[in-house]
Amino acid sequence: MAYTSINPYNGEELKSFPVASDTEIEQILTNAHEAFLTWKDQSFAERGAILQRAADLLRADPKKYANLLTLEMGKITREALAEVEISAAILEYYVKHAEALLADETLPFDPERGQAKIVHQPLGIILAIEPWNFPYYQVARIVAPQLAAGNTVILKHASNVPQCALAFETLMSDAGLLPGAFTNIFATREHIETILNDSRVHGVALTGSEGAGASIAAQAGKALKKSTLELGGSDALVVLADAVLKDAAKHAVAGRHSNAGQVCVASKRMIVVDEVYDEFLALYTEGVAQLKAGNPFDEETTLAPLSSQGAADEVRDKIKKAVEHGAVTTEVGPSVPTQGAFVQPTILTHVTPDNPAYYWEFFGPVSMIFRAKDEQDAIDIANDSPFGLGGSVFTQDKEHGAEVAKKISSGMVFVNQPTFSDANLPFGGVKRSGYGRELVGLGIKEFINHKLIYVAADTAK
Ligand code: NAP
Image (cartoon, rainbow, N blue to C red):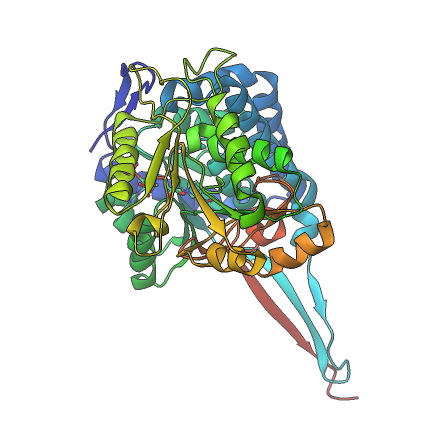
């Protein structure tokens, strides 16, 4: 197993890194534990100062960080810059809010008997296993809250973005972080098992596929460690009869195709009520046709290559299987370049519940479009999915949209907006999209000892 950067736009191998030795892994664990013993006792202000410096460094030279995203996984420059900014915003969120979020809580309790409070204390080392699709943002989602809370973090990043992993490690070190408090490892699967079984490690946060989630959750369970899982999704984008169709279609095109469609919360299933289906489909197809595939460094490019040739082959294979089971496929827009890991934007219709593709996540520019009889049918189709991550509802009646949102079984639902992420909003899902939440107060409280301290009243009285 190797950690190798390959530019998905031209197939060039950029750099390769050897995996760590067993001795190095043991040393990293020792360093992370020793760092924890100091870090946990630092004040919120001291920890926050480091996170703020990291945010400032990202903002001081966003192009430097963004370029690496484009080189290693093909993200277009505009999106890469946005990723650098949201990573800085997440770091800054916990600079501002960690102390208040983890303040002691006095519990309502009979003062005749005693006083009870909850104090929120860090646990120790947390392992983060992260995917390649947002190489900095995914790391920031764990590193910022966990470091702010007083935990230390070991990162196992995806094997195709080793340079981004190292860039984040260097960023935190340049920000003045205590050595050992955040370390990237080029680990094997066996190392991960060793780490999860080490008594100094107290939990694991994984973002990735269902397969990886199931495997890590099982290992963590066996070791009696807490896990949080942020897994795949197949978000519904429900279009009701009174929606402004032009806006809905425009949002849907962006919601499905940003990051070349490789987003866990991309709008992967458009569910449109019968009376506006044809018009929406025409507008959506027109919008997709305007995407411009090309060099992700070019400003005019709006559709990036996928992260690797393997990923592109997998998406094409899934389209083929969907068609074998009865789906109708329409390739949209000018042909994508033959060089690079591009996939032609594709619309799939007539995908029925007996087609296995009905339940799949397509991680690329593939849109499944469903005709719903009416609003209730649209909700039923939205909920007929193994996943439950994000979702959206388009309607001019915002209040009604929020009511429909309540009926969709997922972790986040947006009205008149595709699912998006923001440093000020929580993130996470239900069903096979995982469990636990990242960001804001929910995220910082996932790997904390919520300790009860009870002081008995003076019994002499
Ligand atoms: P993946 O193969 O599961 O990889 C994710 C991470 O898990 C990588 O670091 C990978 O390392 C590691 N990994 C995989 N199997 C492992 C195992 N058995 N033991 C230890 N580590 C293991 O995911 P992907 O296909 O690259 O990423 C796309 C998936 O992530 C999609 O399903 C997407 O929806 C999901 N995702 C979810 C969210 C969310 O917040 N819910 C966000 C982004 C992406 P290697 O690279 O070394 O295999």
